[in-house]
Amino acid sequence: MSDYHHPKGWEPDPNKTGNWRELFEPNRRPGGGGGTAPPPHAQPPNAASGPEREPDEAEAGLHIDPAQYRPWLLQRGRSRPAMMLDLRRFEERSGLWVGWQVSYPHLIAVEYIGDKMLSLDFGVRQFMIEGEGLSELARHLQAGTVLALHEYAASVWPNGHDGPWIRSICRLGLPEGGPQVG
View 1: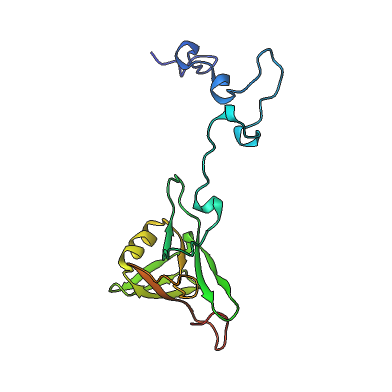
View 2: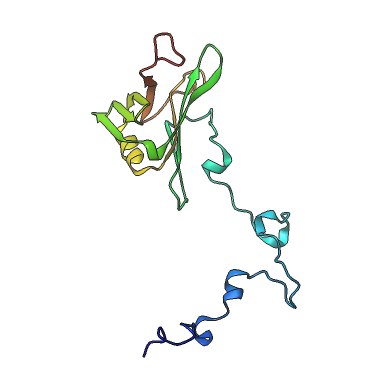
């Protein structure tokens, strides 16, 4: 028979569920000291706490390796999807990386023409990506696992590129003479 209609309401059986306080507050001090130990990430690292986990690409920032060209960076080992997509191109005149960060939830469509051209439609903003071997990139973009795209720049990666590469990233609809047209 069900306990749902019990006059005091339904109560879980403590013999079956265990102690809920221990489940949600495992670091609670014995003896009712009130309060909990600080979370593990707030404690100073030491040898007793074990190895520290390495941050993923999104936490560590998008590092560019000058030794090897990678046209896109994929997220690894994350349970939540990436929220932003970083599109970067190297401006030869200034020697600076310039680009855009756009929100993945606003990605309406990924259109491709063969293996050499992609169009990303974010509603108000649209981008054209040209290169070689971009069908794999289209698949990863549709899955939402790409963190960043890098336009190839010979001055940054003098060793060249092997495999897929991005020749240009261009934002469509900028006025004549607008920034980063190319």
